[in-house]
Amino acid sequence: MPVTAQQVEFLPLAIYTFIAVALIFALLAAAYYLGSGKDSPDKGIPYESGIVPSGSARHASQVPFYLIAIFFIVFDVEGAFIYTWATAWDLLGIQGMIHITIFIVVLLLGLVWLWIKGGLDWGPTAMKKQVEAKVKVE
Image (tube, rainbow, N blue to C red; front, side, top):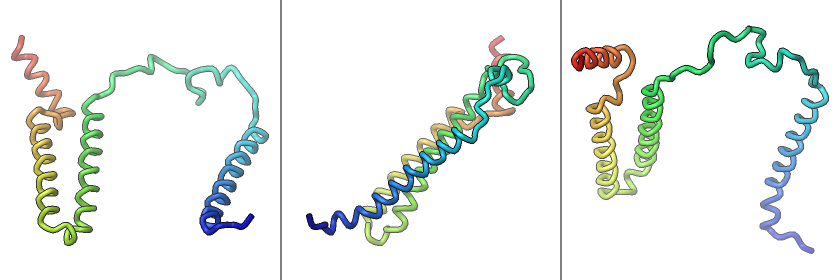
């Protein structure tokens, strides 16, 4: 059976896949045979570092921190879109300029809305505002 050009193109991919799978199995086998495999009562406690846990590991996390992270990802993706537009702006013409302008304006309006709603306020300033609002209610 003759080898086609398409099969020849997939040969490096097949070799790479074989090497990757073989390396994974070799590392797993090395970890299995070289590991201690000993079980001790200390491994059953929540912290294996030898420090006896004190208190509960559950604590309230600050939700605004995660919101800021999500906002960063959204606006980081915006930067990626603008960068790809900038690399081809001369090919896109006036229609590309109009589309990216609308895109930026919509995102800026979203940022302004977020700012007005207080989504960017967190930390000591936000806590101070919450205390002041609570005092006004009482």
